[in-house]
Image 1 (cartoon, rainbow, N blue to C red):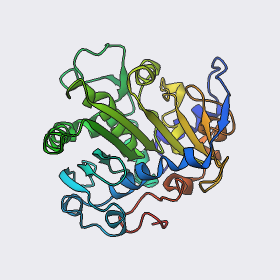
Image 2 (image 1 turned 90 degrees about the vertical axis):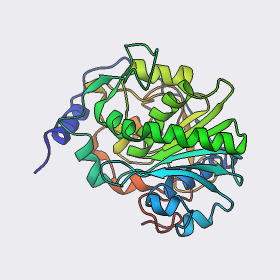
Image 3 (image 1 turned 135 degrees about the vertical axis):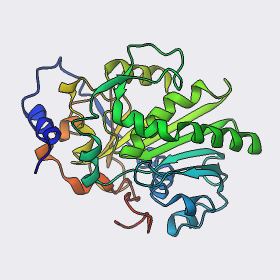
Image 4 (image 1 turned 60 degrees about the vertical axis):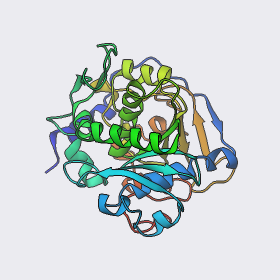
Length: 309
């Protein structure tokens, strides 16, 4: 039986209340600009591997594609708490990397559900001194908060051990939502000289417009990548008070050639070459696009990031 949330999401996308017209400016990306996000996608794909494989970097093709990676922490059970790992990458970023496991399409609707889709204030113990106007999905907050302290401890350990001052954050799907919350959370607890880069894939809407604008203003070097007709990024609907942050990169053609991706200006850009414009209703989405490919990388399994799982 279709859940009440899914039905409401479909109806909300079809009968959405009128919004002020969004910016529809887009810019075709070059192959070099698109390729920048391949390492982020690779780390996000590896996050689907169990914690006992990422802690000793023994996962299959994904781990072997990132030689020299030194893990400093991992956790989660892949069920109640998404898998995550933290380590130092000398190959692509020369930085501490934080990655969070995503979830498959069949499970997303149980997470973005009738009980937990409500917007709620951020936990002041984790997000001290932030404006009370910032609201985020209560279910995503719960998924983030269960691992937040362990992730922070692992990041601090990795930074101390490697003298690194740069942190890279990534994830896919639910893991993208958790990663975005990390991108807000971690800077509040790390030294002021720490720099951050965050790129996430198949991001759902995480918070209200005030939250999205906070991300635009304070989360540096951020991008969220969406793929063709993937309908997951249009959830939860804007009608329920949600908004995407800016800096969307939308894939229109699989690959890494000039013009395969578009840079979308502003929040929830309604151009057909951006997610909100490409999938105006959930019924027009294609679930198979959710797991990629994001350039040359697929999400959704621990087997091989270069093949659909």
